[in-house]
Image (cartoon, rainbow, N blue to C red):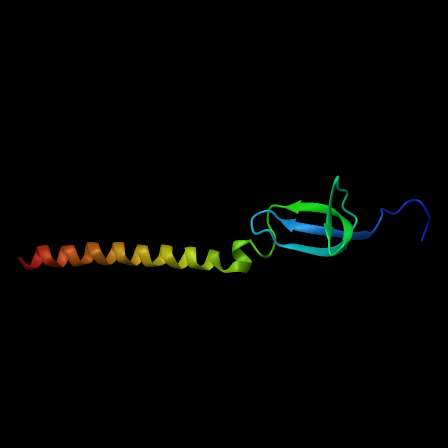
Length: 89
């Protein structure tokens, strides 16, 4: 590899701001903040969303979609039941 043209590749702590989860991985990301973890100081990168908080990975997205489908079914069923009751009178 050529010297002086590659970014510094080092261990960095990524912290999920929603859940508080922290994990160490290697990255070239530039940060100003640092954190002490397990007795060692690491650069800190604050993430808005990680796999711990993203709806796709947590399954929350699926529940929202399912809840919407149930509400649509109930609304349609309520209209149909009301129409049958009125016609039967």
